[in-house]
View 1 (cartoon, rainbow, N blue to C red):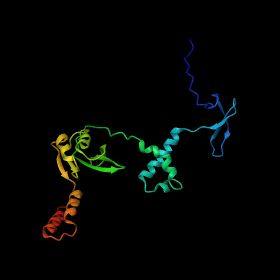
View 2: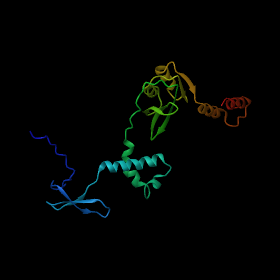
View 3: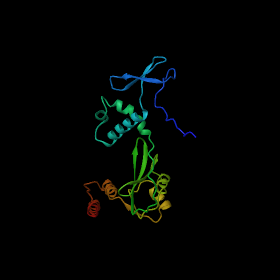
View 4: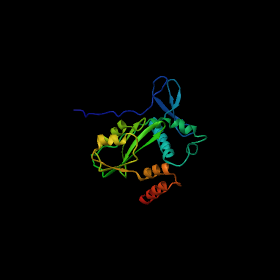
Length: 210
């Protein structure tokens, strides 16, 4: 009885012109292997798309998370970096896995980017979820909140539609207004140098509490 043998797949490239197998034919000035077709005589080099993409993604992340401008991170005017990494903007980032953990507190806020709004939930150490939308609204906040259990406390700036979404999804969660946004709201009404006594007292009380 003969042993069962499995022929491993071949990594030898084939000619893009006639389909025949290629043979090695020296190297290019850049050190890459040159391949030649013995049937039709065409010559070519092989490149791995996965290696190229990985290098482009690493360059994109280095620029995105670093301090360099596109010109400094790339070459020339930065156009080559923008061109080679344009596809990176279309990568769909998966949501964090829901563990079912009930967090002590969750900080929520919305920020705008390229005409879109992203609502973010943070537990004080890690981002636990986000929701893309065109603007802050009850529906958008509710979509974010229903992704995980209600926390004990939610810290918020009181964005549009947020309170209504909390009443719908996290009814028993206590609400803590963000100190920074409270102070900003007070200064917006009193200014930093209020002339009226009432404004001076409100600003002084705010500073004392903060």
